[in-house]
Image (cartoon, rainbow, N blue to C red; front, side, top):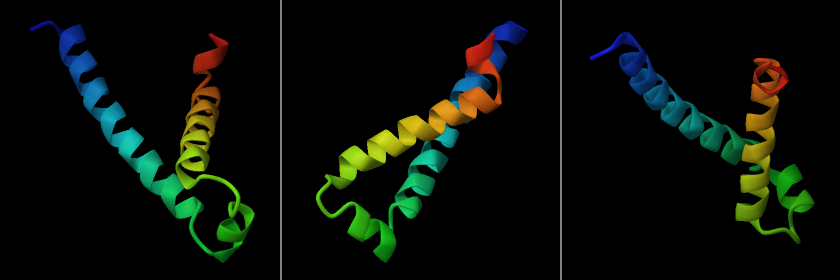
Length: 68
């Protein structure tokens, strides 16, 4: 197997784990009394999905991926 293929497989596995980490962090970030009050009229799943997208975008920007 080529080095590129091996690195691609490793990157896929790393990305899957990072997505799980972002999911957990966003879940934690939306918990607590302050966020419960802020989100009382908002669907939790929609807020969670939006936060995950926002976090992923900010990570990509930090890594300069979107600026290449």
